[in-house]
Length: 216
Image 1 (cartoon, helix red, strand yellow):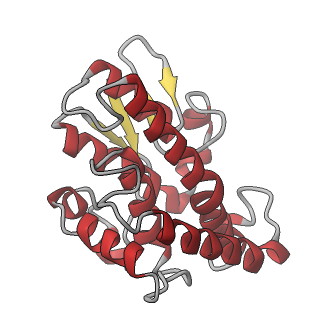
Image 2 (cartoon, helix red, strand yellow):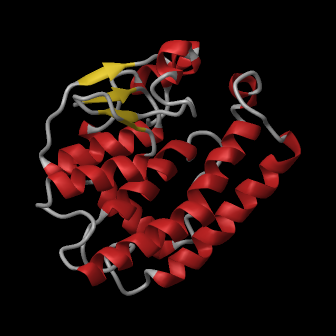
């Protein structure tokens, strides 16, 4: 088993998950700056061309961040980052869904269609006129989430889970590409500081992050 790895917030989310779970697997690096993840070698493994992917020893490849981490959670159930009971896992999954549909996908596409459009225009279908609206939608959803977490430490409740990793890695990346976290969102800002202080937050950064000036 190996992680097909690169710079970026989604690969970082898997790396952070691995660190929190105390799982060690080898990485194979792909250079997204030169679009190595869009070349035939990688597309044979993950036709979506997204990073990261998890390649099993017998050749099966999983190419979605949440699917990768759910698979690893099933193989290594403790310490749990999805929940120890069916009810806790359902709660974590509903918050992952809410965060991905309302915040992270809008944030990432707002970046791809706006700040990062020169990189992405030749790699995928971009919608420049949608960039501002997507970023605004993500910002509005963060205001909603700020109210939801007013009386709890983490997004899904009192326990740190994978949804905290998903949103943290996204926000830590997009804050440097035109989507800073509104300081008026006191609950979300406190949450971000708590996650940022975890050892896995620094340890999961890609070696090229400092050179790039972005947290991925």
